[in-house]
View 1 (cartoon, rainbow, N blue to C red):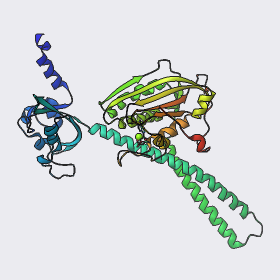
View 2 (view 1 turned 90 degrees about the vertical axis):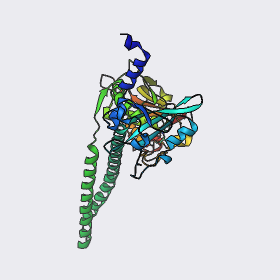
View 3 (view 1 turned 45 degrees about the vertical axis):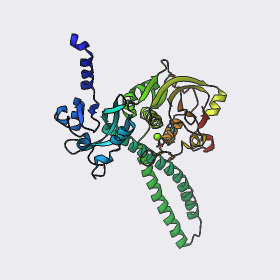
View 4 (view 1 turned 180 degrees about the horizontal axis):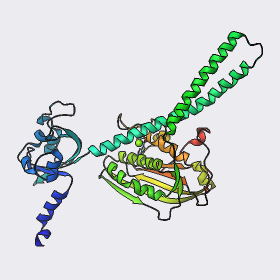
Length: 400
Ligand code: ADP
Ligand code: MG
């Protein structure tokens, strides 16, 4: 069909098929034209009803706190007029029915012979992405609280056994004064109740029990890809490179997804201006020296690397990133729990993390997980449990 080949027809098809809202403005901000997605997202019966209207009054009339947003204060329109450059922002937009949503909004000036003759606005609803993120932050918090509870309950139980042990010894003493015996019985009862409390705490934290299965790291990455794509947004170049002959590992799949998510979200946050995020799997054999540097056993490992071209970190930041609640992000943006969780999960699986980063030069985080051979034995001895001294547990960090 001749029609299908015409440039005009193709352009129209593109504009009608895309899920992004796209509309054109005159220099004063009146709608000249809008695509069907604009009308659909904003809840209007058709794009035609928007034409001729002042778009600020249609979708931008009220601020998030409910107060009016006068057009004179609309920085988008002002900036566009004065500087004539592309503007991108997360803005609250209003639908026809009076509800609102956050959108990623880009305003691209149309310039003819040095004059701004209007603008093309492209916007995308961020509701789903924000919902996913908050759900994920909540899950992160619960996991951290669970870990904390389990850790405290464990140590606390050890202390309790000292208390009950000595109490029992004292109770066995002959010729114990009656009121001393009463006092010791009170201690015994109180420690019994404390033990019951710690059992409840442990039960709570075990609800997120770990289910380690033999799995292929590549499958985990593939399975998490749709989720990652949604959370990452489209400003990033997203590359996945999977080693085809990857040996199996033994780990909890949900936990590995969390590891991947955390690393990817951190990478995204490090690239506010866009960039490249690369996820890579590979095999690695650690000899004695390499294994010692990572504080794991020598042997075969499968690795999962997440690398970004973002802001990077200085040496001081790298020293702290695995600490719970360490964050350089503003309140509400960062919990500081992501990497501490990643660290916990990886150690629990007998693995390690290597960090390579430098300010302005991006970050690469590489997770090493011991290969599980089908004979049923790990080819590497599991690492010592975490409680055994913090010094031996420091993640390895190196500069890029
Ligand atoms: P949060 O992301 O909530 O801040 P994390 O534990 O995930 O907490 O990360 C801690 C800190 O480590 C971040 O605030 C950031 O300063 C730093 N960080 C982590 N990943 C990266 C990265 N890919 N690039 C730059 N900095 C990072
Ligand atoms: Mg994080």
